[in-house]
Amino acid sequence: MVRSIKNPKKAKRKVKGSKKGEGSSSVPSLPTKVWQPGVDKLEEGEELQCDPSAYNSLHAFHIGWPCLSFDVLHDSLGLVRTEFPHTVYCVVGTQAEKASWNTIEILKISNISGKRRELVPSKSTANDTDAESDSDEEDEVQDGESGAPVRKVVHEGCVNRIRAMPQTPHICASWADTGHVQLWDFSSYLNALAESPTHTQGASVPSNQTPLVKYGGHRDEGYAIDWSPLVAGRLVTGDCKNCIHLWEPISGTTWNVDANPFVGHTASVEDLQWSPTEPHVFASCSVDGNIAIWDTRLGKSPAASIKAHKADVNVISWNRLASCMLSSGSDDGTFSIRDLRLLKDGDSVVAHFEYHKHPITSIEWSPHEASTLAVSSSDNQLTIWDLSLERDEEEEAEFKAKTREQVNAPADLPPQLLFVHQGQKDLKELHWHSQIPGMVISTAADGFNILMPSNIENALPANDT
Figure 1 (cartoon, rainbow, N blue to C red):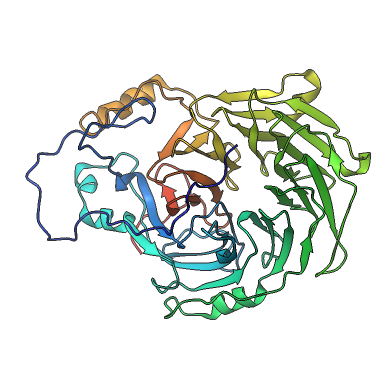
Figure 2: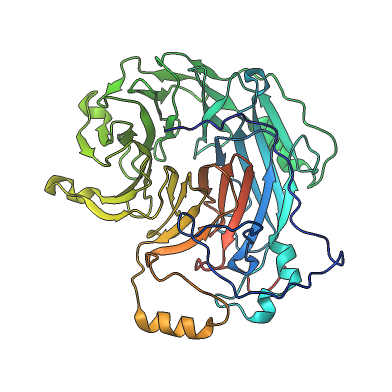
């Protein structure tokens, strides 16, 4: 799997149309058409346009350099937040043009606006300029130019992947392309951001903070890393030489890393996921096409190994609301859902999708709906799926009757496909926000998107705030 972004350059802010009152178009409007990547082609002079009525909220920002990996931090603003505007804390890692320019950045993104949309928008809603302005904002978080609070820490080498500990999110682990895994304490930065006003002036100068731990025991760089959701401080890290190391916390600032690795794959370990219910069990996936299930009490060999895909298995996600379900995404564009209770029967696949035609780069179950997951691909699509959906001809006929003049929807889309988000180039990673139902954040070569699709059933405010 190719993870790096070729020739990373500083992101440029895009102008998304003219300001209100600056000219008008005499070209008559055409009926809306759903555009399918890999099926439809853009003619010369044509361009895709976002339909703002499809989103409750849509925002974009960038940090200057491309970002391969980030994490959403658990905060103290409320466990289930439904009212706009929202505030989000993230930790992100850069892929800068020079190794010495890389940083880890701790962000506070405030005033994320939006409003609830109609599932079947009326014509007046579709042409509502206020609705468009709500969902077509682009905020710049580069060097504090937008005024968004940010703190930076110097990081040696590109950040391949970064994850925050669920129990204490100010403790973060980063994988570097230098081959080192480092643990950091960002509590002082998060406290400063929490106390800072929404808008600040001036750039954030990167700090030369010393990590809590800098581990060089892996034989190569890696991307696989995951914190245990059940045991605070327990961590696994996997490298490109097929080795997985277990980290056990000794205190709040020290860890013991088992020098004797778990070995069961024959190629690079691409992703790791702890079980949401078993503290000693984790899963791994590899370029060898296999998924392995491990029990740390049973030695250094996998308890089970599955030939999961015909190509590299890039990413996996363990469903925390339905712990028997494990999803996986492959380099051939397919992704599968497995019921781990069926492993003994041989075929544990309960769903397999071939919608994407390019490598799957990220996959994650929703923290609020057990049947819903999000997928990103190198085909520049972020898709959201609801596995509980089935085709209903009567419901389809009713919907088509309401939208006959507004939508020309393809007939061959999978019924489980709930939403397609486009507009980002070279998508790398996505995460749901565990405290804001329906919110997804994604990173790509040209920056970040924060989106909340209007057709995800969550308790959102009906009126503008």
